[in-house]
Image (cartoon, rainbow, N blue to C red; front, side):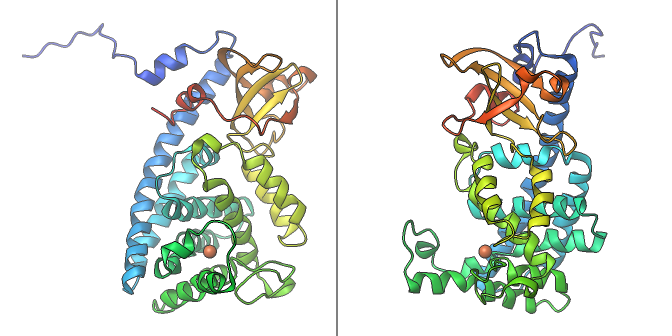
Length: 349
Ligand SMILES: [Fe+2]
């Protein structure tokens, strides 16, 4: 019979060793917070992988002109919603720092996750939450019918390129109309996801009250997600700049009240932002909470004066909320999250 040595300790994982290497000044609460975040990200990451497979299937069907498998997509939304109920705090960290290998599928899955979380924070009924999640998954499916050289074109787009790109909206709507029971919220969100309140959007250039709440919500999520996802994780430090750009347009292009609610979701300093504290420390934002928007959980990794890198330390800025030395004084857009920080949050193993 096999004997089990009761005193044997399982070997430490690489990540646990990294956690042990944290500066001893890291508080036990912050350590526990990081462990919980890591667990949540693993769970949610698995769900997003399954969602991505369903989205890929939908894109392939769209490319071939085949009808969508609505049941598969609805199942993915339900799974994503259930996983977010358990792991919502991990969403921003995971989506902003994760390495993306396919921008389009990843964009749709992330948009769906953001929209589910967004709809939930607005207190919308369950049916609406699900509809917004589905809209996130399907909103760009028509792109599968557009030549990739036009979709991926860098720099100036001529009128002909634009006409092609605008077509992804009616093409997606046509796919959805083939499914008899597609929800009106989903249709409206897809139809209006590129419309802007000032009439500067497309394909119809409608404005103001002509754009419903689903269209206003998806416009915010689609713009934010697309702007942060174009680049791999080494450039994850763009969320803050993008929010600032969108803030300038809030009220004009985006619904201001909804934008404010969205900022509560992603944080004033979105995950991945590199911030400088008043005491000269440089830190990477790991996790936000809606209650403490100005005091996220961060990993401190350098001293600003000489960019001295010292042992990395996890700091919950909320624990130091009364100490001005721990105030965030600026965002360092010139820096990227270092490898060891990404490893510590479990994104680069
Ligand atoms: Fe789109």
